Length: 231
Image (cartoon, rainbow, N blue to C red; front, top):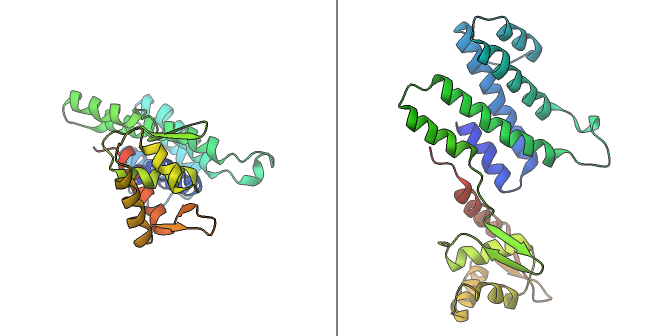
């Protein structure tokens, strides 16, 4: 479960390269789990995926596991394991690969829970529903405006998210966006000053504001918390 959540969290902060690595770890653990299910042997590592698939297919597991689940795990790992040289040099496939793996890894984990969980069926369905739930983005951009879609965030959180989305903008821009939801512009400016004082936001020579590495980390943590699956 931890490997799955690591994979999902990297997607939601747009760290697609690292998310592919996390997906690989999750899929290898899924391979080990299915092999243990078939042969009661804990594999320290999957050295040969073709050999693994053949052994699972020829095991005594039910068809749903040895033919369907095993092949989907194998295929997903092959997607994750492709080298960039095998793709078109004009198109970066990483985002497409991650989009596919996002859905298929959720399906794989859902299958493991459905097949092997022994608790109440209603609770199992709640868990699976959380895994496949599609959440709307935390921030929406239209033309030159941004809208924070999560209602219960603080002004400070919203300031960080706007800068995270825009990368660079003026203080007046941030105030203008937030005055749609908040009426106190002095409070917004106070939060911006506090972030500058604590080195989460920096002011460039042209007056524009940007997030420092410290501020980026804070914004990413807000996004991770929003998309976190609590099981």
